[in-house]
Length: 102
Image (cartoon, rainbow, N blue to C red):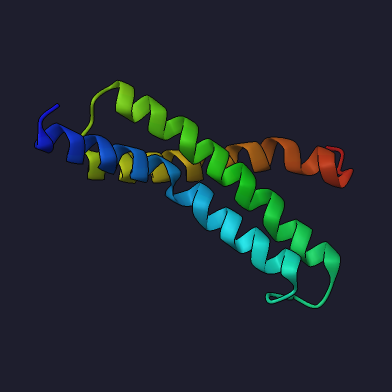
């Protein structure tokens, strides 16, 4: 394997896993008590959406790698796609989770 393709593959892997590493770091800080928002329910309200966002980001990044986008364009497209998907899921599932009926 050439050095250039190895570096390119490393950037693709790092582009895919950075949100997972950040969410695990955030989760461990909350769990250890070093990051406290004043109540347990606030912590859960922040951790669950962050985990969902990271999952959506990872899935959309896999799609961008499949279509062979440049690494920075793949990261940007995955970030935008995950925000849009997260908002759509929030609008669709949010009212039912909160017990709001239309």
